[in-house]
Amino acid sequence: MEQHPVPQHISSYEFRLIGEMTLKQFGYLAAGAILALIFYGLPIPAFFKWPLIFVCAFAGFAFAFLPAGERPLITWVTAFFKSVFSPTLFVWQKKEAKPDVLAPTIRPPEPAKTPATSADRAGLTKYLESLPIISKPTVQVDQQEQNFLQNITHLLQTERSLAPHGAGPAPQPPAAPQPQPTQPQPTQPQPTPPAKPVSPQVPKPQKSQILARPFTRFPFAPPVKKRLHPEAVAAKTGSNLPFPEPPSQPNILSGMVLNTNGQIVEGAILEIRNNQGVPVRAFKTNKLGQFTIATPLPNGSYEIETEKEGFKFDIIKFEAKGEIIKPIEIRAKP
Image 1 (cartoon, rainbow, N blue to C red):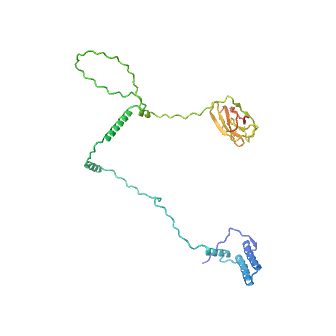
Image 2: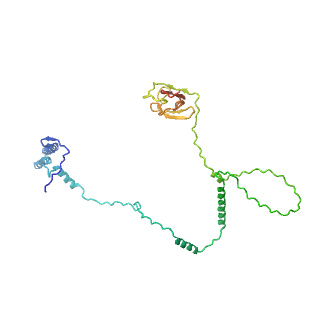
Image 3: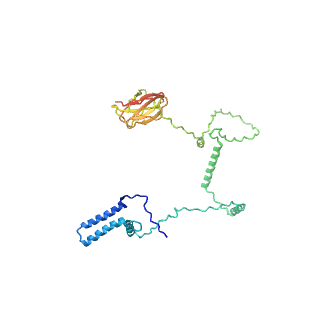
C-alpha cells in the first residue's frame, strides 16, 4: 500500500535566504555556531571542550537540514519533551448531581372521573338515613348568634327593596286593625283636644344606602395659574449673540442668559407662560448660557421668568406672531 506524504504548510510562505535555505534554517545554524564559539572560548579542559563544540555545531546543522519522517527535527524534540514532562496521572472527580427536588418531574395524566349514577346517589342517601340523629342542647350563645344572623338577613332584604340611590317612598308601617262595628252605647261626649300640626318626617338614609351610591371620580386639579407680571420688560433681541445656527422657523424661541458683566450663566432655569399664566415650556441653559426650544409656540403673548441662585432677572415679555424671533438676551439685574 502506498504511503501518502505528510501534509505541508502550503498556505504560508517562508523567505529564502540563500538558495533553498530559509531564514529559520539559517537561525539554527547561527545558534549552533555561536554556542560552539562560546564553549571554545571558555577555559575548560580539552576533553570537555571539543565534545561540547561538536555537539553544538551538529545540533545546529541537524535542526536545519536533517528532517525525520518528513518533519523537522525540532518538531520531534518538542514532542519528546512534551510527552516526558506532561502529566500522565489523571484524578477522577465526582460531579455533584442535582437533588431530586430540582429535577423536572412528569406527572401522569389523571384518570377521568366517572359521573355519579343514580344507584350511587341512592346508596349515599340510604347510608345518610341510617346514621343516628344526635340532638344537641341549644346553648344561649347559639341562640343569640342565630338572632343576630336573622337581623342581618332582615336588613339585607330591606336594602334590596330600596332604590339604588335611596329614592322612593319610605316603607309605611302596617296599618292598625280597624275595630268591628258594635252597638252604640250611650256615653257622655268628651271634649276633643285641638289637633297638633304634624311635620313631615324625612327618612334618614342608612349607612348601607350611602355606601350603595355610585362613586364619582373627582378630576385632577388644574395647573396653578400665575398672574402675568405687570412690570414685565420687553424682550431685547439681537442677531449678534454667539449662536452657531439662529432659529430658521417661526415662533422658535432662543437666546442667552448673561450676568451683569456680560458673562454667560450656566444652568439657569427659564419658564415660559402664556397670556393666561399657564406654564407652557420649562428648560435650563447649557454650558454656554444658551437656550432654545424644539417646537414652535402658538401665536400669542408670553412672558419668561428666569431663576438662578445668586442672580435676579427681570420678567421678559414677548409676542409670537408667526414670524422668526431673533435670539433674546436676558441679563441679570445689578
